[in-house]
Amino acid sequence: MSVTQVLEGSEAVALAVKACRPQVISAYPISPQTHIVEALARMIADGDLDCQYVRVESEFSAASVVSGASAAGSRSYSASSSQGLLLMTEVLYASAGMRLPFVMTAVNRAVSAPITIQVDHQDTISLRDPGLIQLYVESSQEAYDSHIAAFKIAEDPHIMLPVLVCMDGWILTHSYERVSFIGQEDVNAFLPPFRPANFLDVKNPKTWGSYAEEDVLMEFKYSIHSAMQYAKRRINEIFSELAEITGRDHGGLIEAYQTEDAEVVLIAMGSMVGTIKETIDKLRVQGQKVGLIKIRCYRPFPYEEILESIKGAKVVAVLDANFSMGSEGALGMDLKAKLCNRPGAPIVVDFIAGLGGREVNEARIVEVVKKARQVGESGLPLDEPYWVGLNLKLVEEGAGK
Amino acid sequence: MKITMGAVVLGGTSLDYKTGSWRDQRPVIDQDLCKKCGICESICPDGCVYQEEDVYLIDYDYCKGCGLCAYECPADAIQMISEGK
Image (cartoon, rainbow over all chains, first blue to last red; front, side, top):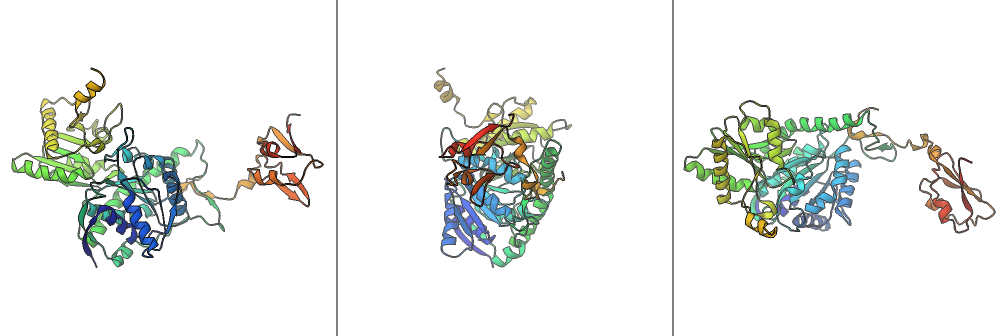
């Protein structure tokens, strides 16, 4: 039976995780992730969830606990943000390499310094390479649904990789939205118990992540990439299967919004997508042919679907809530890499937007569309990304110019 | 080596690899000085110190010669002797 409630995004995630019947949870508190694991700890303490909650002294240990628990054959879960996620980095590389399918909520928050608790995607983008599947969500409802899908994706016997469900801190975790839940029977049928082929067993000892010399390491790494490629198909299937149960279709690896006839296509992920959709609806009323691609799955990178959806576009505006110092935004780089050498490829303009919680509102999205059109009409791609809402005067004053 | 998912391979194989050949210095216990405190046995990172009846001995098949036992021995009963000699 499905129930609808108005509640905090964090609580919705905790209820999704609970419905997935995890056996081990370990996390270390960090804003804005804390409410999720607090809610789960409460459920365990109250006897509402039969699960072992392991308290630890750092995020490194939290990741190590869920990694070990997963190797022991337990469905495992953790959550973190920002510096906490980065402290887990070494363990996350090892976990992907050892093919341990735990799920984590990565509550997006900017990375210090300067220190801030506000949202951007720098933390999870810094974790794009280890072999972690990364899903991004637009709303609390999508966060709830994506967590249930995430365990099934992670535990697919041909995938067996950690999955990060990335959700914007505060904007999603701490605001109250209407969320519909799936009945426990339906979740049980959708997500059977975790029964891996290999698990730590003292009677049958095995080594995980064994030493690999130069004659095999590339093959091991390539097999993770193969699993990622296979995952593209499975993620689409799993999302469809879940949509059948919930009656809610958030799309597949991407969601294409008003792209059919669009001259300007925006590409974005996370909570800013909602504002972009609203703005597009208004621009459409004015006769502007603008569309949006929402990236739901960033790793593996769904370039086939993206290329299909931007076929008719003159210009593509990528909104990156992250930045690679000395280069540009990650999503912009990914897309340009796949477009390069393709005849008739649209011009791509990379916009850096929303760093450290800088608001991405309607006015700024209109500015992005306008700038993208200008670049598209000039036919001259920008060498450098365009920083949305940047106060260059402050920067220059600070540098004593 | 076979490419397995997660590089999962047969475990418990460390006994097959006699790492004693890595050693360039060997610990030698002077049984007359040894006070049988057992510190060497408890701190050896490779578990190479063992007791037989009342005497502590070293398993040179696996001892890598790190010297921790000699460093920690309160009775100075363990000397590190160069393997070259």
